[in-house]
Image (cartoon, rainbow, N blue to C red; front, side):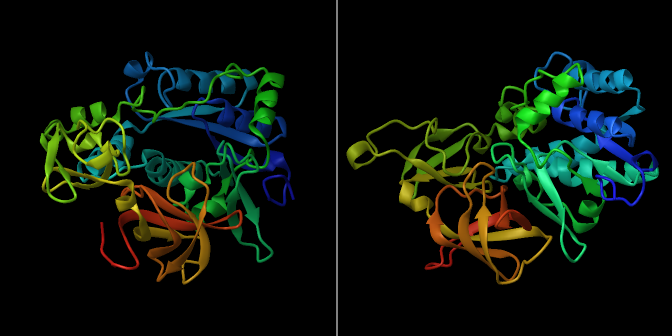
Length: 374
């Protein structure tokens, strides 16, 4: 068995490497090439090449495409750039804008993995007669005793990307490989330096690739001019406390920058965004305790394992520590203790130890005692 799990020599194993232009995917491609695999690098151009040249931290455009090409040219393996701008716009950017208009908080990186990368790019890899496709994601693929591939959290907890890969199907997982998931990011950097990669010291991207600077509201308003529609900021008791200039500027659980002054309640306690009503165009605020929810209702679920009435640990934000819960009927998650700031549009991802069982998109939340959706 070679390191990618095939009973043949590396030279007889073709692997397509999804190269974003960052150090992780470049090291993935470089190491596999060094090990003798038949490597083919593929980079997707996801939005306007010219406009992206001026943006720092952009992914799959501009400088990143150039870096991926240079790595492949220097090491001597083939590299292709595919124009997927239209696919990305329709599957990711449009969904991103529409989600905010519905009062949700979307995760475009999951959508990108779910559609453009792990659907469209996998098809390209198969068309190139690849045996598998490798990426630079920090997540582990482990083959169990039953011969079935499992998805597990990365060894480096600070870089773990399993939350963003919950929508990976079993068929996709069987074809995918994640060579970096078993080690610390510092090891990746050391290999990049040893191999002399042009992007060895390139910093990790922090922003959503098509939202440099993090001003997502500006992007949404450009895509949807009607997003800049004023409305009322109301208290849970019905009082109108102020005005907003579009619900796209608010998220569930938000405390700062709401846009109302003090003097509206005793003790001048802070207000939190409790809910967003896209139909009424209102932002409802209240005390922190009003955010408490212990039921999460899911849609568009993907289960790699479990999904029945199972005891699990769940994350509904990428960087949070998992909390105890029970899956009910494959589409409800009952939390053992109430949590705060759970937003529709995010994902709820379930784990059994380090194994990713799957999850779904949060449609709404509720309380076990009231059984009322929020």
